[in-house]
Image 1 (cartoon, rainbow, N blue to C red):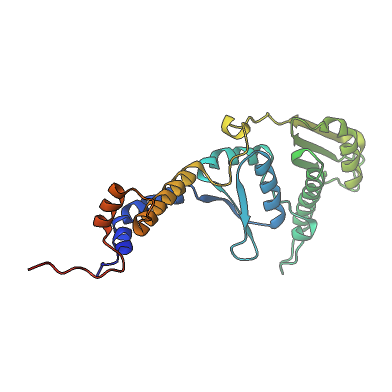
Image 2: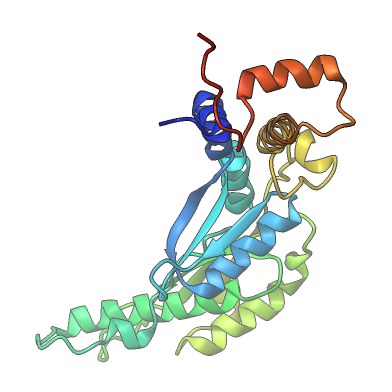
Length: 267
């Protein structure tokens, strides 16, 4: 049944082939984040590649995207993305806040939803500034009595966290002016802006030394071993004339002469 020497040798090498496959799978990539929009996946991919982390993106369903890295880089990849404020925090727009749901809202609910929507819109605008990791805006609109003599002024607080190399603090007057003109009844002096630089993140030495190869070292080693085994198999089957007789003889005894009929034992 297994008279072909190549088939016999292939069956004998099955354990080694399974071992090679196990090492190859060990170097495969794992999903880091899934169900992403393409813009977020592109931002994450750019940051990871800049940090010398081998990353890739794919769309399993054609609608959402998945970012994958090697299992050994999972921890470093998470820290790199976190230090860059990725994945970006989703902000609610005014259109989403006041989406018609068939229910009648009270004036208080409408007012709270309006304040939340304005805060989210401003946070999304500030997050688009180069170097900003995250931005939060808290708007306070007092519920003043129209007949009252003393009117409480509106106020706003802005928190911005930026990358260490970005000089966002110089934009404080611009940020205050932007928030002031976005909220009715808000004065420039009642806008407080807090700017904080993120702590610098140091990459592991193995990532900063040089860009990693596209294939991990364990996979490269196992592929090299497999290539050597296939080469030995080919030489043993072909038994070229340049092969020394002491080596060609044992190989012939081990594998048999391919294509030659078996000799019947003498009487």
